Amino acid sequence: MSQKLVRSLLISGGLLLILILIIAVNNMILIQGPYFKQLSDDQRIHRQLMQQLRSTDGELLGRYALNEVTYISRVSLYGENWIYWYDAEGNVRAVLRRSQIDEQATLEAARQCCSYDGNEISYGWINDRPALVLEDSRQEILLDAESLELLLRYEKR
Image (cartoon, rainbow, N blue to C red; front, side, top):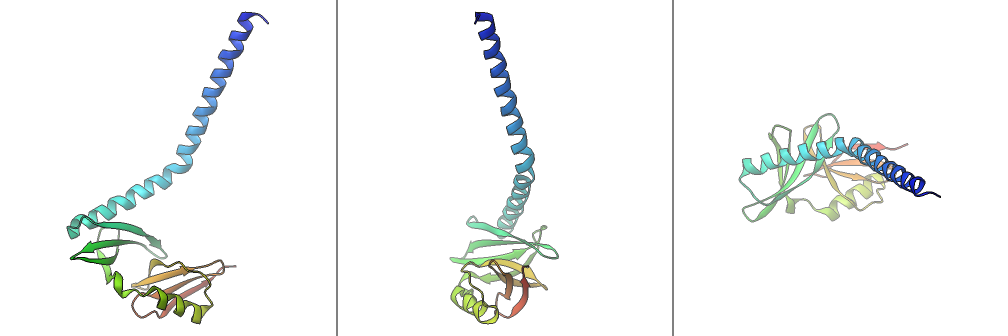
């Protein structure tokens, strides 16, 4: 092969590789973009709560959206961990000491009422009440965070 043909093939191959990389990066941005935007908004709302409470130690535990979006954060204040449920404007809806939430009692209540077979507990909001959310492959269960009363059981089909 002539040197011009080899050089032409190398340039064409390089340009093709650059084009593939550009397309891949573009797809990653388009696919992941909304996720990162939502995560950024959630973190901004969490920081607003932390400033409002004048606390430096806390973490966003998540957001829960059934009828309305509710944010849940763990905040350390006065030597204790607190769980805050609040809306996008930073209006606090409910507060519980982390020590008030008995994970073993929660799991046992879910097993007794609904044959729950998982081990993970997250947080939610339903009927203007803070809730503990337990989800397995068959169902999603919401228990009142204080009384462990069954608030909602959604069976997956």
